[in-house]
Structure formats: C-alpha cells, structure tokens
Figure (cartoon, rainbow, N blue to C red):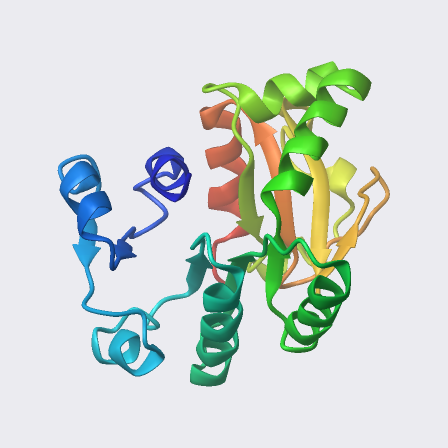
Length: 210
C-alpha cells in the first residue's frame, strides 16, 4: 500500500523515500521504489538514519503498536506532520490510542475505514469516487502562502471552476468550503482537477508574499 501510494505522488512536489526492516519486502520492491533497508525500527535508529528529518512521515506498518510508538517519538522529535495506520481490533484500546494521537496532533486511519469510505463514496457520490480513483484527476493538497489571496473568497480565485475544492484544513480542523469561504494563510486546500488547472492554482497560492 505505502509503495503504491508513494509512486502516485508527484516527484515535482515531493522528495520521496520509503523504509523497511523486512528483508523480503526490500528484495521484492527495492527495484521499483526508492526503498532503504533498516536494521531495526527502534526510534533512535530511525533518528540516526535521518528518517525523521522530513516534513511528512507516514507510518504504515501492519503492527499498530509499532506505528503508535514511532508516531509519538516522531512528533517529539519535531516532525511537522505524521500520518499513522492504526488497525486495532479492540475498540477500547483503539479509542485510547486515538485520543493520545489526537492530543499529539498525529493523523491516523485504518484500512477498514478507508475501504468503507471508498465504498460509500462509490454509492453516494460516484462523480467524487471517479475523482478518487482516476489517474488523470487525483486529489492534491495546496497550501495558501501567498498573502495576496488572504481573505479572498474561493469564488474569487482564478479559474476556480476548473477544479473541485472538497475540503480546507485550517489548524488541523476540516472545513467544508463554499464559494463565500474566505482563505487564510496556512490553509490546506484539498482539490482535484486536471494537472494543468491544479498546477496553475498551486503556483498562485503557494507563491511567497506577493
């Protein structure tokens, strides 16, 4: 899963690396991805190998406890954004882990929730489902850093009709956007559309202090 997701990310906007301590996985996939073999998943070993020296860290090990412990260590180290796979069968244990992760501002998901969400989208919103699964119209994240667009309404953005802005994340809280929603610096816009349209908006919104 992690390797497939990494391969889908744009190399223009992301410097990508993936790590494993599993020799079999390394032998299987290292020719297909930028995969590095680690001796262990101990947090100090990861720090020594600069795994935590990143803006976004995704922990997708099958063992939830490994992901949980490393996520908290990564946030303590100072990784700005940590995303964790959290597949826990015991509901009480999962709730406690989710509370701890949320308190540490760690994002988390489970494969069950992802699969249910995808199926629900296919039933309730087939157009949006096509966006999620299309190789031409992928979801993109654009961060507002250009002060020129602070307080601008979404409807005032150039060629905004060429994209779909499905969510805005502001201070880690999701916002359902409308045409009258005003942007703030630091907003993370989740959008889809053609590569050309998305890149046009990205170049405008992510420019620095125009």
